[in-house]
Length: 437
Image (tube, rainbow, N blue to C red; front, top):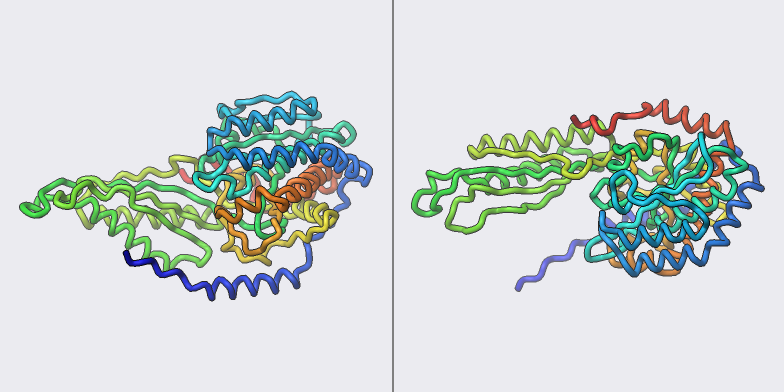
């Protein structure tokens, strides 16, 4: 067997070196707002520290027992048990999703939600570190709940299933779970500490061509080759990449290429992911991919079936920088330098359903580093880091940061005014469900 040629990594290393220089020279993000008083923040932090042992133990337990999207039954139950142990009432199965959770402290408005994720990846487990997202979110909620009686308003913990492709947050939003929430905060483990890092929007399309079967040797002229249409689409997408912004992505696989080599295939199919950093450019790029498939159908005389977004589309993240700056201040208190947008390259990213919420309300999706700037999401090395000492530290540092950011939002009316003014200036709420038609 001929072995594959491994890619040369010189470009990657040059990017890493440039990023390391930029990180070393960067100023951390700082806040113009005072946030909550020091007494409130200290009490919230003490509440996190009181729960440090069970939070870290749960993170390790989730890591050892990964569950994929929509079937995170053990993980959701364990998270609910921790909250009930703290005296909170927990609703399970909210929004029509069996593994969704909701707990709340306080009442009325302002109302900030701390989010938790707990789904894992097939084959590599918690290689996206959702064990950390879950337990840091739980800790952030416990910290904020400790003082909500003094700040006024409400804080919720919302457990959101199926971030890995299932669009759990969008499904919960459509079901009304976020209707009375004013802002959301969450974190994600990463290679670097970043207060606001771009994530791309993502749409999925299944392209199915229907041809006419024929004997490939005796009467190929009586066939219409669905595989030719798929190949033409794949090649058309490859040609499109030259004319895309360097930060956009289209990638896919052929899922059905026919059954036998001596039969002209009457069915062939492919699946593509389309990604971009702005909602409008994502919609435009999706239209260009669709036009390529339409052209391939015309070229080959095949019928075409396009199935967009069998799971919800993901929008890019619209970060709220006023709120993200408060996260950075709290991370500085934990000995971390949380970088602003633009220091770490935009291509080091993916997509998340938190983007959909960020177009409904102000949102923070902060990145917390695991101590190795060469780590890459969705790899075995990342999974190892998420289940080790660096992951434990991220749980507690992250919980303190989320608690502090939530308390700041509840306690500081000037900060809230700035948060919502920024959201309005960025375009306000978007009808996510109808955006792509």
